Length: 218
Ligand code: G3P
Image (tube, rainbow, N blue to C red; front, side):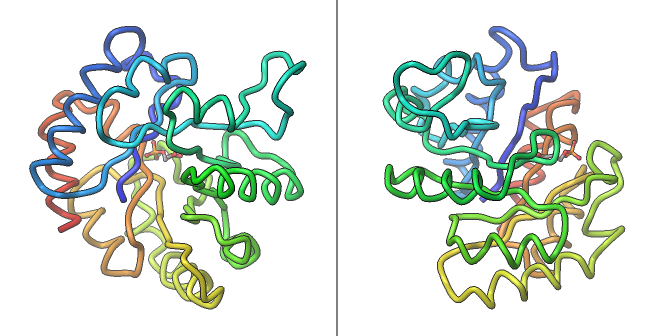
């Protein structure tokens, strides 16, 4: 799995998000690589007609009904959003909320991606059996210095931690990934995919860079 987190980058604002998702969709089909996109929250329903999974960047453990300004899993599902990132480094939540949200998404058969910043969190949250644990050292996010080069041991140790949960959870890694070589290295170290933002969104040629990443995953 290769997840493109669009954050709130202006490069994907308005109609531009459709171009990104369309490109990712084509490349996913061409290479048989699973690609998911997490658009800015307000653009989610603009791109759910493509076949690749569209994920929310964040979801709230708020109830359906009289809650204002929150995003709830049940309504996301009805809008054909396939899952969500949970606890991204730029949007951390409590461990109780993480637990509740993983359960709620699983019940709805939606994809859960719990983001963690270190190995002990990977160990702790893999036990909840989310679909993915994504490890990202915060200091490397947006740096252009890949986690796979700067902190290879973090990926190998996280892979062991996730395996020890003995369930379906798979490991992703992210932060600073900007090239196919970074992707390849992550996979060699034991990651089953990547979570990437600026390396794709800020690239001049989306087709070229998404293709480079996809090929590196095969
Ligand atoms: O969610 C992905 C992210 O936090 C990594 O960001 O820009 O380093 O790929 P970036």
